[in-house]
Length: 629
Image (cartoon, rainbow, N blue to C red; front, side, top):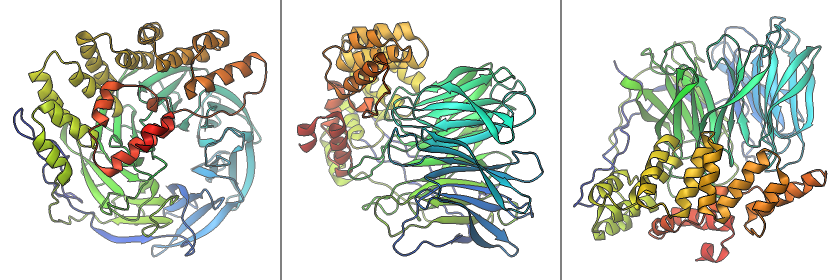
């Protein structure tokens, strides 16, 4: 079958024990054949930069034509881009003067036959523990005039609101993600009627960015999922007994605070009759130069039933956001579309929109749809023009330069034709290739590739074969697996490294973090105590904080001086004194571990973008002198 986009081969490293690394094989690529690729809705003023936080395709007026709902976070409004006959689009504001709207959904909340609108408002988009969030419902009067109902006000920064009958009483309740900053939570709101809702807490934890409502266990009632980012990096399920009583369950935990989850979608990706989970990680932009991490990308959890989920990495994508699922090529299986929120000054060919074509055996091939506009954090997929092929709408969030390839809202119309493009080749930068030629072993070549953002797996695997007693190689492979979200593989690698050297404290700490993510608290504590470092003591203290054992927390952290310890102590002291907890600095724990083995890799970095990232991480951890160096 012909595809809309041609194959875009996943890069791989070709290596041997005696030859230097080859660059990734040439990519063959193709573009979407579009009849229209255009900005829709209001165009920004020349001096304005778009800040579109969310788009949702929906036939709001139910006239048979798909429209687009838009959240403009700094514009403080929600608008409706209405499609009219002939494929023209006009935009009108339906909610103004709302602080930080970041998510919008359309659903018939009052069951009167028309679509109402749920709005999630953060209050402010910059990090803050201030209680400025809001939950709003815009009631449709039947003529697309909307009556505003404030459901919650003065709460922690709200990032997502979804609807479903969560207590089995026949009306729609809400799931509410409150990201907060250092303090946040996930709640469900019970519908009491007359636009009145009662909140119930599901988890007291910051960093929630999405809270989809779905029957994750196939038992006939609706559950709540939550994607937690920041220090947690966890996919939670709150499993419903059918009456609104929920049991928390960890579906997947990434023991890497730098993983940077950025978006989630729930769909039956393998079409076996249950709900799978896919999500992106692409939010770790360092403040100096807004560069992504080489571990950014896309992954999914395969639902095997009985609460069992299997992790699969799909692929790498710089700054990946907003996974959307649809059969883009009408071949009967489900594909994925993602966008990217960043733009390099020095790499104008970086991908902005990617279609991940599903192949046989649940493999996915990435195809570049667009390289501009840049700065995209949201997209949705549906058939806008009625030709039977899903189209794409994306929104721009231009918070940092360059600002020369930006739009507010863009659509790509998919007309299903194949459009071949010349093959693209790739070579390592000359400086990296020179270092690879100088290296005499697979391990040293792998470390050079690792330090400069290239895939070192084949070299590390070859090094394991030639040096089976060296713990460095399984340790480095475990770090790579963990940074890409594959916690199971990371744990196996670290256990192998531990069998070769059980005295290395950072290895014990990483094993403890993975065990904690599996719910093995006692075993995790043993590993942290064995490590006996500042970082591992903070990890022990966080376990006590989750149980509100504040005296024990202070005992563990006595004499500890790292910023994370200070923050936890301030929190514990306030709790013990019955005071309102004051906002404190959120700490990226992933940047604070003192890891000499990994420092050997970092020392081989020679490319400017990765040196910038290293400098920023040192600054975050408080190592100013090393950052300057």
